[in-house]
Length: 214
Image 1: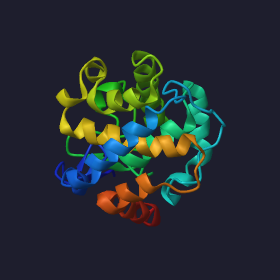
Image 2: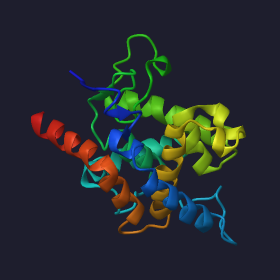
Image 3: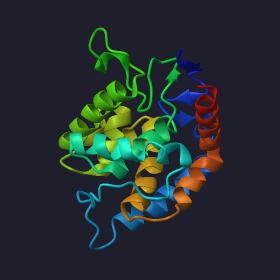
Image 4: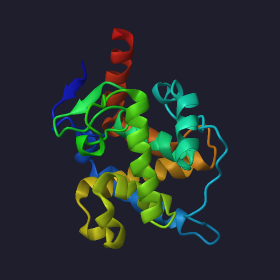
């Protein structure tokens, strides 16, 4: 049975604590925006190494082989897929939100076909990967906007950042900055640590408990 979390506790993979820490993520946005807009930075390119960066938490690393396989099937960077899993579920395949989002990639029910088991890892990864690949195409290969699309829907891609829902702004900042470190192959990430400190660690604790309970 899937563990259902209160919508107040987890909002499409963004822990409640992260919603209260603008003092943390606003400066991060400024630093990260400066970094990715630096001369020579190409937001539409990534190194598809076939492996995820070592910076991801152990709860994500245990899915490493599956993540690289799923990413290959959908033609996306495994580090991008790992970033989505990190923020959405921290590797907990049974997790669900009261809004209806399900599984490893917190996929909404309307993405599934009748009879599919939404929390089954393979099924969840297929539907989550389908949507992420769609978002990459819709965002014309911009991985960072694809993350915003994954959380806020395609309409945000062509809108100014200031008009996005606050949740999507947070998702873009946290996800984009973690992914920026991951695609560089970093062994650690200050952005990921900041996400954990701001509430993500609670999500990962739940993931560890669910693994032990199986």
